Length: 536
Image 1 (cartoon, one colour):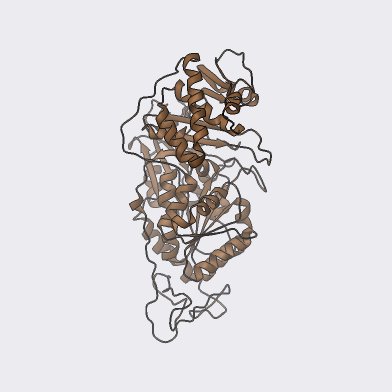
Image 2: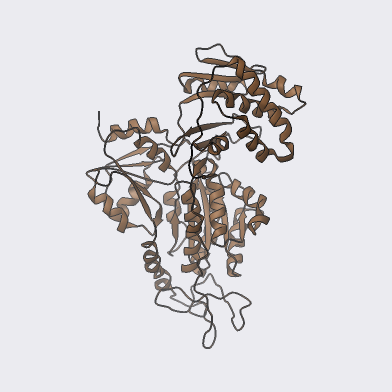
């Protein structure tokens, strides 16, 4: 449905919700579309499309006034106050000799009638989705449409919108494509929701993308494989979740000590240990910016939508290789698995070449002292170069010494900061001179933008993208102008708020926090923002 709306020129947003159960549990999607950019779903809906009784029971309360329930009358019953749209989906599937899952296609056909969507658009998407197996699905879409037409009054007629075509893409897909655009040649991961789909997407498209995907036996192996690949000159990315990254700490520190660039995509889960694997959270911020033992520079970025996921994943890949440091892309389930219509300028990402050792006098020094702290890089096989690597404190040649290269390593931060000052480290939305400031990070961005549209008051929203090195040169410009401020986060302890105080000395006035595993609902968030700024 999201792709159908996108093809009509509307902007769509789709979130998938499922439980961490082998037998499936209650799975559903929320779909939203409009003739303007849509940044987030809303809890309230106009239509519940139910394939079983449980869906009606769980979601009837989300219906807006005048909303309706479209349901498989062979599997469920409804006699409530909402508009009633019964349709015999199971019988339709049996008529064409299909399989039960094909009820979806008949349901889509009925939805197409309810919203005045031409079936030829539906058929294009079904052909794209199912290929040679599309025929019965197309027949079922027609059956669903034909049943709905004489039995159900249309809800509205969706008018196609003329606009520049955009991607309908998830954060998962955007991150993989951004990394490939920046030169990634190998993706390594042990499956761990919410980044598992990066592995399956990369593997399914490996030939077309010109990459290799590897699923090793565990997370520790995945991290060390990435360092081995980078030592050999191959750009790699590791995908994991917070619990998996906890196992990678020694390797993460090894990356900092050995100055081997490594990029880790870390999907946050709610709660400690296994937590809630299939739900969303922003509770790992403090863990990730302080990851590893010992002191060493790192880069941490938190995209807020698929466009930023594409650009910033590619960007941080280049920065890691340019400055020879480990980097982390922080994400979460909401960003990874939600789809949205969004424009992406693929030209914003390309391979930026690191400083390679072309020639030298005497022996090649892997850790040669330089003003920037970044040593000329060579890879095994380079004629005349013995490329040493070590986890010990060492001299320029890589031999163990008492003392070490702390100043050299930490000196890279200046060059990294100078580099970031030329890039987009934060984004500001709303009124430039508004005295009331919202601060948030990561995927909470969409809910904040949608909530601001529901508030008839002057507001500015500062969205943090880079977290380490902390972009105080940008952040302070907004904090100093604000008369009142509130920080919005999907965690219990206000981690960004305290981190900003640690880095700047500035205490944001209030927090709005959510930690139940779901993203903020814009309607409810708008009420909380009004309360935080004490607006009646």
